[in-house]
Image (cartoon, rainbow, N blue to C red):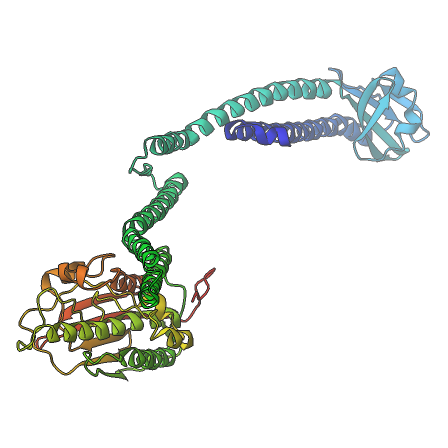
Length: 538
């Protein structure tokens, strides 16, 4: 069996076909031989009936004779009631055993005498002289000869048929597997030259075409996975380089300030802040890679969504309670108002934790944008506007909210969503020069229809440059002013967009007519059945 497995598919199919053809040939030869033998037997019996018919009729009319038996190779015998042979053309070997033949009855019976095989038929004839018998016999030598020659001819034909069947199986299998060989050669070329092409799909739409389509899907997924890995390595090497250099410089400065306790403490705190941002950036890179690796793996009902919204608002209010005098009080409010309450069987295709990440990023970004705009406004006395390059951002803009600071480290440990890893806003926007600082407000609204859930986050921040909105969801994208005004990593909105996209939803950013930014996240409702092989990941 192991040797057979080492053979090619063509060889195995051919060998299997030969075995099947051989068995079929043997059965066919036996069936044909049996059928011909039955036909010859019936023909011989018919001849025996004809042989005894005329003598039996003559014997019934004239039991006293004379008895004129026909010739022409007919083997007959007439026996009277006493068992005496009145006339006979039987072979001597049969005639010597007349008494045994009389016991055979009126059915044709095969009798072997010496090396010869006979078919014997005995017919009783009732006459005035008593019950007399007519015996007819036929030698089976001719029948056996016919069967032997027929069997030989059938065997030769079966062998030729098996050989032809095997050759046809070989050729047809080679022809059927030729597309597989071409597919293998294409795959080798794709692997050797790192081609971006795909396998050719047979227009016949057969099983091989389905295989090629499946392999093409696999190639696309592998390329996408490799591209994500390359992107992550590239992003990590590019974005981690700056904070690592800053951290190294801060540590060198701390070494120089070893004699000054206050300066050393300040250097240590700065290094800790840089290390926190570095860890946050690495976590966000890993999180973004996980999200982009596949579809969403969780399901969340309407009640859980509203609970997550309330929890996110609580976390945001703690974040907004800044001790800095330059930061204005920020009013944070939320509302949920389903236009049509989703049924229990219709859920959002996100886990509660992932939905919390979306909320933390968008609301946290809005808070940071407002605070940054207020700080910039105080830096330009008498103008009442935010200076150019101020890193203002709306809800979900790219101004980065690091919840890993010393002020909020304790509150993060109590929250259900990992806001410390996901509120990394993108620092993408800059505040317009003529933006007047309004009352600082952030509002999150959750609504539902019969087909989708809509999250809307509005803020009174400086908004986002219109030219930047189309690329705001890309990773590591930041407006020019925000690139130096804030230490954002540019991943907050990328995570929001990736999470919404993994659930089949979308994210839309727009500047409000009266100022501020409006971010709308649309999440379609799906069936409640869990995704096979997936688990809700925190």
